Image (cartoon, rainbow, N blue to C red; front, side, top):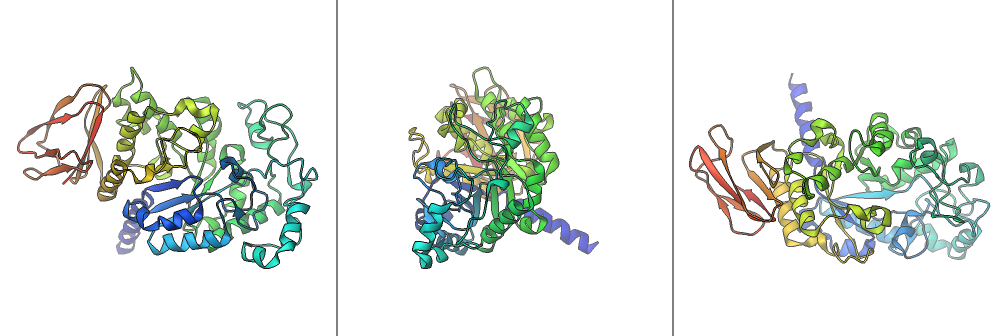
Length: 459
């Protein structure tokens, strides 16, 4: 009985810890992450997702998602030395580091290596020309020879039908007519062994989680072969499978649902994101956010990574329609960081998209305050107190209350406090800095929510 209780408490603690906020330091130099380590800690982040750690060429953000070699870390954002310095700096501050990993394909460089030998003669010559440096950047393997060849790739066919699961998971992502596409890796024993060594090497450096890029394009059998129980032990693994909805949405039913059924990994909660966008739309209702998981419009809490923006949305023309109004995005952050469920992620870039909206967003005063609220109430239950077309009001245990109003006029709602766990005759103060205080003094309390605003009150 004592052992069962101890196990239950351990699982509860693990679930609570897993909900720590992720900072997606998108396309940041490793040295910049290191330089900001204290500020990242002080802002309340406990996890940082960093740029892919492998060898790649080019300075464009998308170049990081085209690996030339898993066996070394070297690109425009840093090398193995700066990567290790960053991991050590964050680990010393009790911040976990997650690596963005690309297992589906290698770099689209057909003009350089039509034989599909990776990293290829040009890169091998570079290695040979400065052995001491490249030895220091090595993760595993023999850098005097190629580690992949033609037999490690599938057919040179481009995906033509994105509703065809077999095509999506076995053919190439191509940019249009004449583009050879991203060479798609197959799950033969050699490829699997190389990818296992790669992930284990990153884990040995102190990485605590993996984001699986383009997971939609990988068969579950490939992912499960690479991500063994030993590699996943003590790690948080989640995949990127972009959908435009939850249950009933074609992308969800064809790709995300089978992924969740066939692996034990987490995923970006695109179903919840679609529900958030719908709730904040003209004609939408905030009541849609009361319990979206109950009808398949949010992932199970233990497997969800929640967000209001990901790097693909502003940086790819096909997804830009999902960008929210700036005020709505801020209010959505109050929901994502205030609610109970999932691992929330905050996105911050270097203006790769040209929108100039997310540069230094990680350190905005309002987001720091929301993270402070999240960290204070983490692990406590959630109860919706009131909801309607314009507003959503919920409590987190007895410590916090969140109120969100998407509409252009203030909203006032009366809530029965007779059986509430919220404390009476104490101040709950808005952590967002408005100075507004809630003090419950009787069986009914009137909450006032400002137009197009949020309150996150803490006891």
